[in-house]
Image 1 (tube, rainbow, N blue to C red):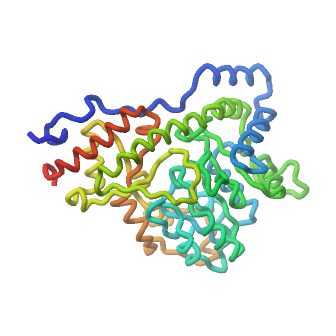
Image 2 (cartoon, rainbow, N blue to C red):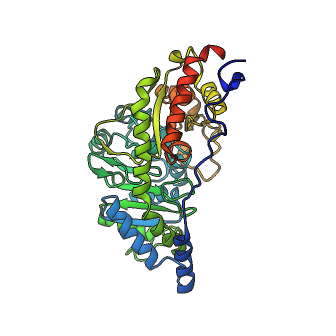
Length: 405
């Protein structure tokens, strides 16, 4: 019998740590829903408008435009830019499928560019190397709420006349050089899906400082109404129920961020006790929201223990961490087999990309071996005791790793 729980020892935590109940809610959400129900105005109306004003101010943007989810917000943004068949959209490979799907849905071609090791976000140099005469847009993703290098990305984008959509689905409240993300590029896109910082079940919002883009996005989400020219579009409106819930959720976000970052600081303060687990934040990031904190796991400092096996051993000790996106997007069947269907016209109008030959070495090493995250749901919304227990469990694994390698 060994000391590690997975080899028969006593776990650091007697019972596995449960996910924090999410979304957090109370009677206030119920009252907000009842208010809308009693009003008789359930379709987009004053609740949506009020929330848009609140969110725009919070993210340092001039305008905010709600929609029914945080995937279509990126599609609307691409449509607002006039991106279509045969155009190319550059995206990072470590992201949720929506970042690529929005390009496919307008007939554009997703082009993958590698990421930076410490943040897992789009690398400006890799972005520029991927630019062609067909590149119309780039979608940097603020993975886990950590801002991408927006100085470098905006410099490349402006140099080549490329539009910038910030995929800020994880990044409500995060800042780059004192400016909230979503207000730096041409259009920002946020999600209110059930795991996000603020929740309305589903829902999304676009932010922009451009009056014309704001007007166009507003019309694109609602059949083209209110725009001087006819638009071929659809109905992507947010309901009053969603907005009413979000107005209540909004009142909690800063307290929740403060709690996450207080716990994150406990972890950072003890990180020096662990050899082979590192965290490095760009000094230009002036606020993190603590959605997911990215770490680099060095297997050689754990006697060659693979990251995935480390996660399994940690779970036996009662704690959970994850690699987050453990497969680069282009490695999925959708791209490997080009299962885009007859609606996808990119190959007919642009260059055909063989995604089986795409290789982003930094992203692949992070996905398969190096990346670990401290999550808001498992770790950072808990107690100081939970965070200290997590660190103790990691130290225990390192000190007794010979039992399993």
